[in-house]
Length: 614
Image (tube, rainbow, N blue to C red; front, side, top):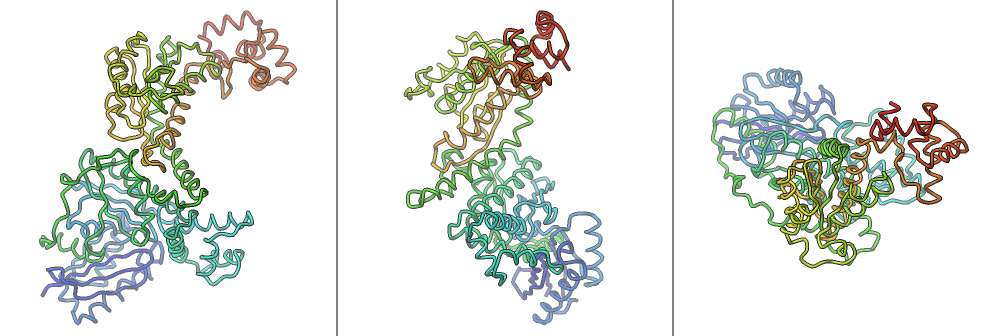
């Protein structure tokens, strides 16, 4: 009889399994952690040797009957680590072939019997590691407790931050009560001695994550916020791996492993929500077997042994959710009508806080759109927004604000709203569904090659906006879009698609909430960035602002004083001498020239004060 050993070595514990060639379980064992970065090399060595010996002795199987060992070990990524552990296994288990890999790979085998898909582990540590159909690998995370987000250590650390912050404010918290009780302490101040004790290990701190999980599962929103942050970090890691492996439009499994995923429904639910907002073709699965058995399977596969397990559904057979991410229900707000108002507001705040985070990945694409649109704007082109409903109203607001803020003419930044300006305050039934009307509106504006047309639509599928972008493309305008759903039809039309995948709203389908917030942030950046590159901002000052009232006239004086390093009285005098023209006044003060000369030099620079002053 041939036997195989599988080892799952984590930061907190190491699990062992002894199986035969048919994957029948012969024996098990468990010892302390085997990640040398957490427990030290000697402790890892002892855990591995003792675990295998105890398991073989209990099963009455000699080492000579073991045909191979498969081991998934946390932190086993660098060639030097692999070489060190290969030498250690050769010393501990002489003559037994060993297949060693990162602890994520056996989980893939445990889930599907092959190395395909992405596994994300959240235990003491975390990692997302994937393998595509070509055998190419990519990973994200797994850098240790200082650097990783989404791990048990991360959750525990965030809980301690929340606990100490509440204590500083003189507030009681369920986290402090739970953690002090767990550690047998009577006061928050005693945590300092416990936390910084010389013998304190990483896994001691990470173990506090169990209390966060328990509190979140019982509805504590402080704990829930921490787990939502962890889930978002894990989803981001998986999305990074998926992009690097170029799964494209292929469905792929994401295997959830580790103690946090095992014990926290909050983490699993929010992770799935966050991930599918970014990658709708990802589907989550649970391992069919334990990670240590998966390690044995990894070894068996390396020796050419067919694995006798049923395969999970193939990626091509997985049904993609029919509803857009923005039209799904949010796991945080089930039963909202039965919960306190503060709970609902906290859930909204948790979701709103994600928006700025979700903006980060789109900044390079947004910057590229701004640079191209600004170049056209400087040559006399227009910035034209097109939208319907909330998206259109936000576009109208942004366009309107450009007039007083940057002294644009109303025809330079234009918002086209489905249903016309009447739709600004009243719903115009069916207007957004009229694709032809969108194209007609663009043609009526006599759009040309110097214009930039930006479609704004949460769903990315509004017919009016699609028609507008189709017409703008036909007229050779620059086109862009701001959408909140990946793989949106509008994104396929735009030269510069900006997708901010905000996912489900706390109130299902109400994209005036989080999606609207994301659109507002993107529009803020777009118009301000275009005006910056078009020379209508100097330094970080609104030097093209229209000083149309007392408050703004005083602000104009402050701006001139800041830009020219004057006191307010001097700034007011120069402004008066320059007929209230801020850029003229600044040039006069900085260059020591007459107002008429300043106007002439500014005109030669197309009004760009930065180009004039450097």
